[in-house]
Length: 266
Image (cartoon, rainbow, N blue to C red; front, side, top):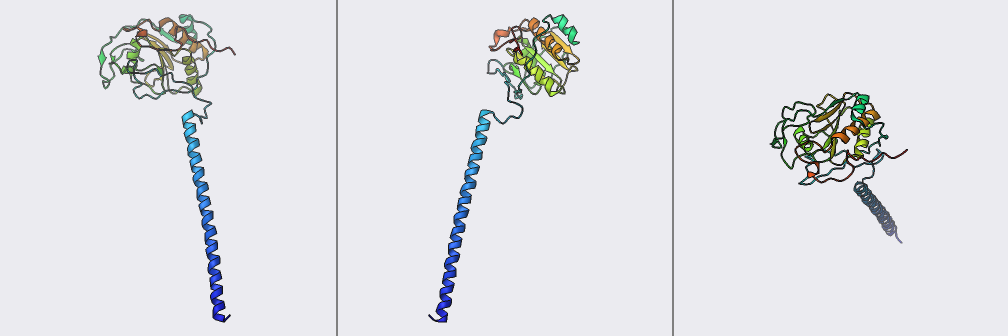
């Protein structure tokens, strides 16, 4: 073999080796692409599963907002539900309303002036209610009355005043109360959510308030179980008994303030 032939053979071998290396590299890149693609698909599947099952909540699991809504019973009006898991309340020390209110340091105002029940449009400005939170007066026309349930935001007053007219109990709290206190109130609400509402109120001057039509329990501070007892007793005495419309005009399920669930024994 001549020198020229040897050179050509050497170049040919180098070219073959280079092509083999390129082929091996392409296969590796293809396998890597397959692996990355499979990982992405698996991650998406896991995310869909978590969202579908409500998993991934670092707060120890979700509770239930108990929203009771349809075209007959009211609207959420775009207000965010409160699905936090409530802290179960202790068994009541007393169900006597006057004693419970006094022990908790709350003001008890029963059979206040009825400010009327005129219906107004959903975009109407807030009327000049004589109490804060309001207990009667002009309110939104159907079906915009605030639906039964627990909410993380304050509904419009004209919406929740209409709910009061239908015998509802509304538990309201200052939004700057601690998370633990809010969850304690949610836990109480979970035992008496039928035809009732729970929501923060950043417009009132009280730490906690409970209202029915023309009735109010107003608590300047929160005193744990004593405040919960006062709210429970207020609900038992006033829920479903006041307002121009009967509480049963709108269907509901679950325990009510007149017959709350008994706290689980510890």
